[in-house]
Image 1 (tube, rainbow, N blue to C red):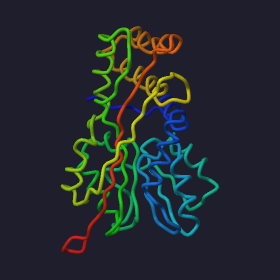
Image 2 (tube, rainbow, N blue to C red):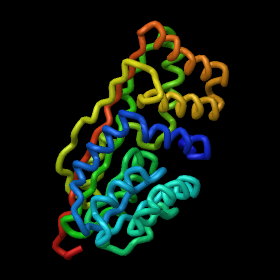
Image 3 (tube, one colour):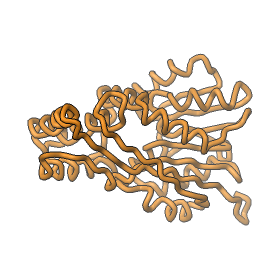
Length: 266
């Protein structure tokens, strides 16, 4: 399976995506679910450009601590610059599969569109459990990508592109299996909430505008869809917008879980 590669251009698209209206609204939903308090210690998985980390740092304050990790050195460089005014926010290159933190170090862990890219989500969840204190909470947001619907005048081309996009993550519909995986890892799922996205306009302030660019770049890069076809797929959205026919919807899901101390006290 060819995974999504977060190179310089993909990182630029990701940072632009993080600032659009849909994602700002999503950020508010995630932070509300986290319910961070002054002095807490928090870990962000896959921090990207540091948008969430800076907000989290403002919630916990100077007596708290935020560790923001990402596998991309370029993303971490941007995150460090964004979080520079908050010295208690530490941004570092690290792998979720082997977290550089002590056991029971954090009050909360959160990730947004990250765990679905792990090669082994069970191992990642066990690492999360290890670094959470008893009673510590996990907030995760991931998309059921099979739920994505795009209107197109070329449905067969749309099917081909989305079929290739399905290869971008090992866990395409992570929310569907996440509760079971949490239990296997020793975490107790509390609830799952829909955080739907619906765009009826194609513009730079919408989620689907930037996701479409990620998809076109990914499928053309794999070679299974010709560059010309990927470009044509992307170009159609501007035409649909001009004719007031644009439509996109998808179903991200927010999952809350907690670490319950077991009989061994771990």
